[in-house]
Amino acid sequence: MNKKFLIFLKEIKNILQEIIKNAGTPYLVGGSVRDYILDRDIKDVDIEVHNIDLQVLENVLKKFGIIKLVGRQFGVLRLQNYDIDWSLPRKDSIGRKPSVEINPNMTIEMACKRRDLTMNAMAIDLSIVCKNNFEIKNLKIIDPYGGIQDIKEKKLRAVDTKLFLEDPLRFFRVMQFIGRFEFFPDAELNNLCKKMDLYDQATGVPIAKERIGDEIKKLFLKSKRPSLGFRWLQEIDRLREIFPEIYNLIGVKQRPDYHPEGDVFEHTMQALDLAAIFENYNDNDEKYMIMLGVLCHDLGKVVVTDEELHAKGHCEQGVPLSKKLLKRFTQDQSLINAVCKIVHYHMQPFLLLKQKSKLNAFKRLALKIAPQINLRQLALANLFDVQGRGLNGASLANKYLDILENFLKKAEQAQVIHGPEKPVLFGRHLMDVVAPGPKMGALLKKAYLIQIEEGIKDIEALKKRVL
Image (cartoon, rainbow, N blue to C red; front, top):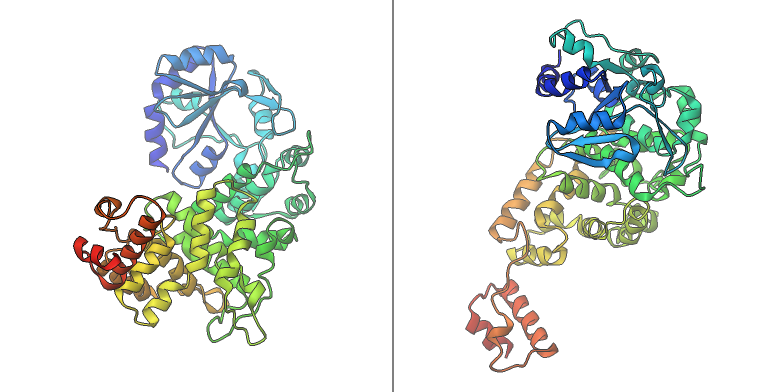
C-alpha cells in the first residue's frame, strides 16, 4: 500500500473535513488515482469537489492559506504551499480556449467521462476515507470505464472516442504516456490517432507549439524509454508528418563495425533511452537540453553519408536540421542554441582523448561551446552517443564510462570543466596605451588566445606580447 498517499491525506485532513462540513464531496481524480494504483509517488494532485459552488470552495480554502486564482475561470483553485489543484466538475466546449460550464452536481461517472484515457478516468471518494478515519486498506476506487483492468494489461484506451478527438493535444499525451508507462494503445485508439487532426477544431489553428513542447518534455523527463513514443509514431505512420528529420534517419545505414545496432534511427533511439536513465544530471533543465541534443546529434548523417558509409561533416550539417526540428515545439532560443552546440561538437570529447590532445585543446573547446553549454554537458551527450551501439537493442549501458571519466579528468586539469578559462588581461590594463574601441578588442582577444595556448597568465607578460 502507498504509505506516502496516507501521509499526504493526513496533511490535508483538516481541509477535507471542512469541505465535507460545507456539504462538499471531495474526490481524488485523474492521474493521481492512476499513480496510487501503480504505487508511484503521487504528484500534481487533482481533487475535484462536488455538490458545492466555487465561491463556497474558495471560502473554505481561504481558511487554510492564500488562494492562488490561476484557474478560477475554469473552476480551478490552488492553495499556496500545497501542490494540489482543487476543482469543480465541469464540461468544456471544444477548442484551444473552451467555454467552461461548471456543474457542481455532475455525477462522478460523468466527470470521469471527459478524461482522455481509462487509466486517468478513475476517482477515490475522500469523504469516505475521512469517515473511516483514514483507514485505507479497504479503499474503494470508482472505476466506471475499466481503468484498473487496462492498467493491469498495460493498455491505453480512450474513455470516449468522440470526446477524445475534441482535444488534439491528447495525441501527444498518448505519445508521452507510451514512453512514461510503457503501456500501449489498443487497436481503436491507434486507429483514432492515425487519423485525428492535429489542430483546434473550433478555429482550425494548429496546436500551439509550446503545448506540444510540454508533452515532449514530459516524455523526456518522466520516461525510461522515450524512444517508444517515437517508435509508436512510426508504427501509426505519422512520424514522417510530425518529425520528418527523425523519420529521415530510418534506413540511413552505418558502418557495422562501429554501429552493429543498425541504422541511424535505431542508434538515436538507443542513445536517447540511455540519456533518459542517467541519474546524475544537475537538474531537469540540464537533462532536457542534453536529451534534445542526443535526439538531434546525428541528423546530419542524412545529408552526408556516402556509399562507403562515411559521414564526414555530419556534425555541422546537423545544426540547421536541429533548428528546424526544435522550432516545431519550442520558442526557447537559448535552448535551441545549446542543443545546436551539442550537435556541432558532440564528437569532440572522444576525439580529444583519441588524439591524446594537450590541455590547451580542452580550453579551446570550452571556449567554443560557451556560454550555452560546458564540457561536462558535452561529454555526457558524447557518452550516450558512444554507448548507444547495442546489437539487437542491447545497449552498452556501462561500457565507455571510462571515456567520460578520462575526459572529465582532463577538463578538470585544464580547469575548464564548468566553463572556459577566465581572461586575466582586461581593457583597463591597456588604457594607458590604447583607447577603447575595435583595436583594443582585437588586442584583448589576441591576449586571451595566447593565455589559452601558452598558459601565460602574467598580466605584464601578456601586455608585452600583444603590444
